[in-house]
Amino acid sequence: MSKFSIFCCSIFMLLICTIISTADAKENFYTTLYASPDLEGFYHAAECNPGNVSDCPCSIKDVAFEQRGDHAVITSNPGLNHTYVNAIVGYAITENYPDGRPIHKGIYRYSGQMRIPSIPAADLSRTDIPQAAHMVMFFWDGRNALSENNKISFEAGMFWSLNPWDPNKGKIYIYTAPIQPVETGIVIEPDTQWHDIEMVVDFTSMTYLSLSIDGMAANVAGIPVAQVFRPDWGNELALLFSAESMAAWPLQGCPFAFSWSVYYRNIEFGLFED
Image 1: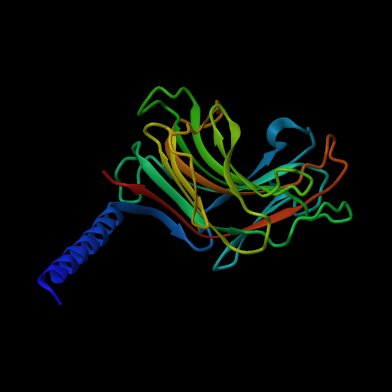
Image 2: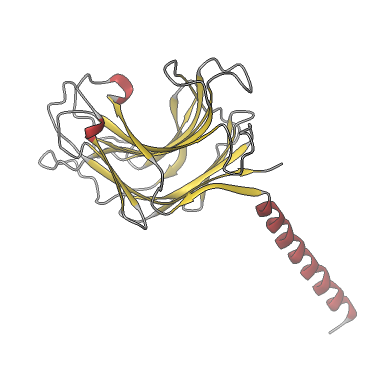
């Protein structure tokens, strides 16, 4: 081998080592704040009549949350009542990170896997019909500790459109300000496989940085996150993240009764340190 070839190989190996070292260094600046295969410590809640398109009664009994060790199952309307409900399970980090440091604005990553139990079908003889599956993270400063938010919740969320009658079935959306869906360009035809979700958000500029589904990257950088006025929320400083399942809209007055489950696993939430 010539001296020139040896020199080129050496430069190439140095470049590879530098790339690997840089990647490792970046990972070293990432702090995991939460990780669980089956959503340990999550609470559950019912969002009744999402979007205010119906006025049917709803309660926490219309949400089911089951932990199975290696995954969790979230079910909207398990009792098949005539209702419209978004089943939400969530986790809150309040005031301080697990290591005791106070929460601050910064860049956060929310990741995990989701799958659905069956292929949605436009068949009214079935009761297992979905509307959507969501993963959302929130920055909440209820007392204006870090900035003048005035009871505004900053919410970065993605959802998979699943309603079999919707021509947009399979599309992946994010929410932007004030709160409206935006297509990401990613489409996943409903199947029963596990799908990898990763969302990175800058809660200093209140914008998305990245979203990837199964390694497919969406061009979302710089899009503002949603802003929702929540006057009934508390005065704490908090980071929250949720996983959600919503059965299909049963039409005005809820003449139909639909139920839907979504499986989630390996949920992780963390902070990119300065």
